Image 1 (cartoon, rainbow, N blue to C red):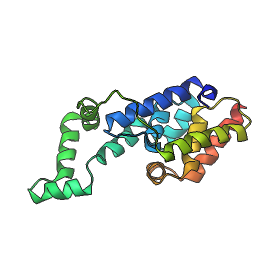
Image 2: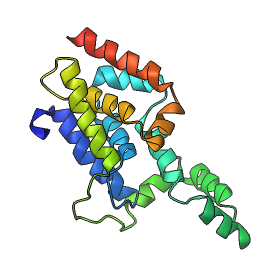
Image 3: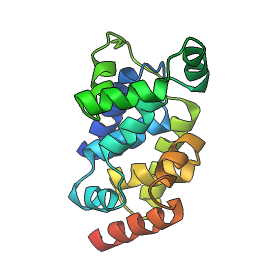
Length: 181
C-alpha cells in the first residue's frame, strides 16, 4: 500500500512515528498521524486546516498537555502542586512550546520501530479507500486525513472537533480534492 503514497504522505507516516516517540508513546496512534499530516500537508490543505485553527502547534500542545493525566494532577495536588499553574507558568516564562520541546529532548526517544495501533492501521487502510473512491491513483495527505476522519478514533475526533465539525471538514477536503481533479 505504501507504494501508492505521495511523497508528502510518506513523510507524514515517518513523522507520525517521531511524534509518537516525542510524546513517549510505545505505538503510533491516529492522533500522531494527525499531527504528521498537519506538518506535511501541501499548501491547499494546510490553508484549509489553518483556517480552522488546526495547526501543528495547537494540536501538539493539546497532546503534550495530556501526557500528564488527571490522576497525575491529583497526585501532585495532594502535595501542594497545581499542575495547571505550573504548565501555565512555564508557557508564560519560556513560550507556549517549551513543554513540547522539552519532551522531545527528554531522552525518551527510542530508536526502535513503533507499531501502529489498530485504529492507526484502520486510518491508513481507509485512506486507500478514500483515494480509490475519488479515483485517485496516489494517496495524499488529504486522503490520510479523510481516513483519520472516517476511522472514528475518539481521540483524533476530539482533537479535530475542538476546531471544526468533522463532517464539515470532510466536505471541505472532498471539495479540495474535486477542485484539484
